[in-house]
Image (cartoon, rainbow, N blue to C red; front, side, top):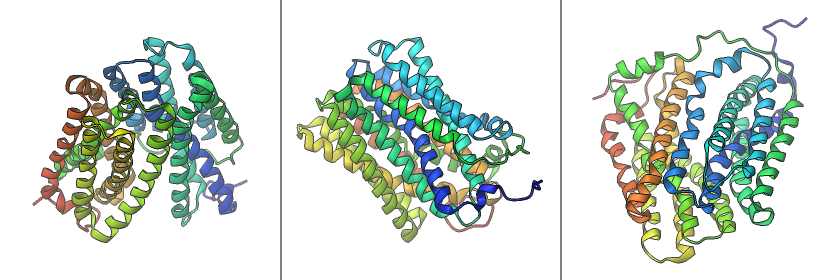
Length: 412
């Protein structure tokens, strides 16, 4: 009999084996994200769906924002695979059914299928993250994190760019059915993954303690406002980029290859460069400089929408926005990790991430209405201005970017 304090059997497996499973599972985690963020805006726009409706579809992202609420259920009941496999099969069924629902007039059933899809995706995220934590031993996290992020990004390229390109050969029905088949294969692989001893959650589930600390800590409310606004310009524009490409007359192949595939690659390069620069410059300086580059890149899309630069101008705007978005994200994530109390880092980081995700969802929901009222050029110019409230907060945020102990310093 094995003591409950003994390490799980999987911890003694070769690291290469663990990394293989992590790569497979995080590919499964990233695949549905690419479908929602990259495939669906193109799919609905080419079917004539209004920009306002496409923007409102950002509300379907709410399960990713609020998944912490039901995460204790995943932690308490069953094996991790008992959650991952059904979620993958559920998403496969939703993708398989998509072509049979009218895309030009999204109705209740289509919205329901998409909501089920994102709830299943958010739930499998919880289980995969928990499985990975249980799989690794101390000291293995660093290399595993690199594999995790790479597999996740490759999955976004495969779904966001790959399915869009495939739709030109097999039509949308074939593309969605291919995606559904891949999810079934991933479900089979997840079923074959090594077992971990089930863990029983000892916590009280989603807690408001961390939120209370941010509201009562001197300067904490400013940090929350900064988290809400730092990427507001990016979030306000992101949902409308794919419809802009469609309305500019670019082919589906161009959208799939340049905007999604090369764009994700540019984001990865930008993230790596941003991480190096943030380490070299410090968080506060990186937030200023990299955040400013992130904001200015929105003007590239505004110019592309206002003037006839042709396809190459739009390509340049896309790659610039993707690269600088990676720069700004690297500085922003470093800030989020830095300001968390080390004693409650996991909970506080989840809370701040959820707050950012909520801002992204709200901004995306209004973006279609904004474009319909102002036009692409004026709206993209407005998103540049929406980045500046965060810069106004930076002087008050600065003490939180400096080295401190487990508790954050008071504001000046």
